[in-house]
Image (cartoon, rainbow over the protein chains, first blue to last red):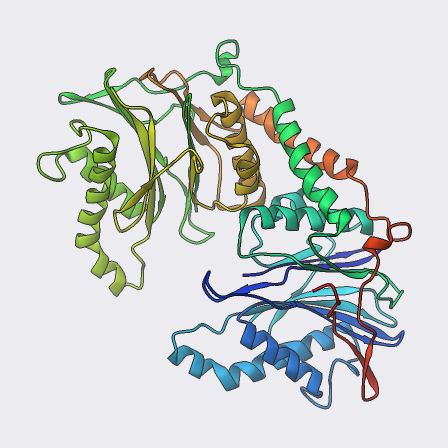
Amino acid sequence: MTYCVAICLEEGLVFLSDTRTNAGVDDIGTFRKMTIYKKSDQRIFTLLSAGNLAISQAVKEIIQQGDLFDGVNIWNAKNAYEAALVVGMAIRKVKTRDEKALADAGIDFNCNFIFGGQIFGEKPRLFNIYSAGNFVESTHETCYFQIGEAKYGKPILDRVIKHHTPLDLATKSALISMDSTLKSNISVGLPLDLFVYEAHSYSLNKAITIDESNPYFGMIRKLWGQKLTEIVMSIQEPNWESNPEFLAIMSPPEKIGPITLVENTGPKL
Amino acid sequence: MTYCVAICLEEGLVFLSDTRTNAGVDDIGTFRKMTIYKKSDQRIFTLLSAGNLAISQAVKEIIQQGDLFDGVNIWNAKNAYEAALVVGMAIRKVKTRDEKALADAGIDFNCNFIFGGQIFGEKPRLFNIYSAGNFVESTHETCYFQIGEAKYGKPILDRVIKHHTPLDLATKSALISMDSTLKSNISVGLPLDLFVYEAHSYSLNKAITIDESNPYFGMIRKLWGQKLTEIVMSIQEPNWESNPEFLAIMSPPEKIGPITLVENTGPKL
């Protein structure tokens, strides 16, 4: 499986992906799920992929080959929306070619992409592109997308990420979100690819690969587990005796023949 | 959807379930997913259910009707293992009756149960029962089971729960796990049913229904969100300038025709 997350903020964009692929637990591989497309100081895009690796590799190959419709490719698209359309068209091209053969083999046409970046003259933009080639764009209210094993790492993002969150804080939150996923799901694994894009910079300065030896991520992994346990400890425990509000609210046991059946159908509903 | 969690500890058992069911977002209902079976001070069982509501209601009906095999039912089963077998047999009975009709309608035979409790003379035991009627028992190493929307609330359990964790701390952790799920998934909803069973007590004293007005859960919801944000804040932010270990490790941009394509294939792999 895969876990990828991307966040679109006032200050820029954060992209984070793991590198584990698996076709069954006995077939684990390492493949990059992040591709960065950059054209001098005019445009920069990042593509994160999840799902069937053969499909996502084919999509990337087709994107890199050039025009997808009406002479438009990601290098000449007028805006980021049009560039996302190009990715969608690439997906549809692979779908047209492969879907039937996959279906014959009992395999779904399963792929998901997050695509975002900036074209000179626009703000940074972020899209979640589905396997049908259609897509949605992030907004101020919903400013992050996840693909793959998204659930473990969602609660922390829901708590912290707002559109005005600073880039560094969002980066830290994305890494914590990844850490929660790594801890609970063996199908997501190191190394990670992280790209933090400062709006209008067209710079790759903050694109790194994080493996076991990265001291910052190591610190997060250690501290987060510790502090999480500390706050669970610091929260008051249920005091059943002295807190009548927390005491049992149950209907009395109902006799059914020789046995006692208690159905928990409290009057509070 | 549903989220249910149960934990088997030295001191006893914790069961927690939500009450939301949905058949599409426009068909939301409230159904209890926890049923407690109690026979004086000799045996007590709790059944948590997830999946197709028609199936789980049918299974419960059949369990309550009596003997499932060789004159055995949950009221006379010799031990908790045999009682879990009874639940498994009930599932198979419903499966035999309904699976084909469901398949004809394009519906999977989808149900999951957590079943646990204590019979006099045994320790408390906990089982995860699958839709095929087979089951696994919790162990010292893996002492909790989740069914339904399990992923959001798994990281916190993975951090805190051990077999020797005290009941109160495990209860608090289960409620935090539920809170994370409620926050991130609209298909899981209040009220909650909570049953904390102290080993050898055969008591329902700590069985309650928790709704929006419950002050303890309200406190957890408020404090947990706050403290989680606080620890994210308290962790050092990435300092790209002064920490060379965290700086970009990228292969140099590769020229492809008139455009620059950067593939993030760092040497660290």
